[in-house]
Image (tube, rainbow, N blue to C red):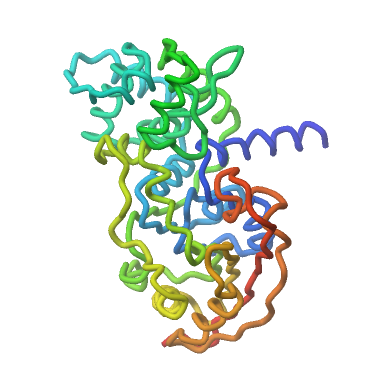
Length: 372
């Protein structure tokens, strides 16, 4: 029993390969998906870092994940490919052994964030992965590198490539430069290959079974889910909370690694608009209408949703308005409290930033009676 539990915990490590703000607890989708038939296809139209998809993998279920943020999609895909630690290490060795030239970003931020040799290797990896990330080993390597791109400096072996920085979000360049200069923090050399080797052996120590999966960096309002040739029986998801618009700028450094500019990015195509609660609910309704068309009659949906203090709109009202606006016959079975956002790692924790007071999060349980 103890050995089985240890092996289970090892398999769950991979879910944490990259710290990410939508920390949807793995236990939630596992609980929702237990008991599903082996042929079940699972859908998460706001997959974030892919916790629902990874839970499906642990249970031997096939899944589809969709997210408009390329950082989220890359992390999710890296957790679903079937690879070993040796495969990830080999992909890194192959790239670093090459002689491809690469251009290094310039400026105070880059000279203070990374040691010159570390930055050189990082940019070589970035360039190669932008050219080709088609193999499972390279997809997993890309997700691993996103996870170690920035974070705190440890007293022992380095766990991240950067100078002192949060691990969940990237500090803005000007602030980071002022912080490092004021505290006289210079970047130390981190051996990229050694760190990749060590992290790969940690995250890929116990490999879950291979399952069929698809991850799309797309807009769930317009992606033609019903034309995939699949019919989903279970949907487990957590949409962005109304008013939370810091996803893209807080991930600017990871976005750079995936081909974005070497500066803070404030907008991402295909994001939901947060102009008003009514508009936001209408956009969620469009997503769930699209989802319903690709589901089997009787498909079950579990949607976790909450809010932030900056917006006065009630999360319950927004989600109910969205569900009532779906152009399919849905039955809302129940709405349950998921507890306060101060308990566990929740979206509303805003990357370890202090909140005025905890906010209740809600789980909406829905059944599709008849697609449109």
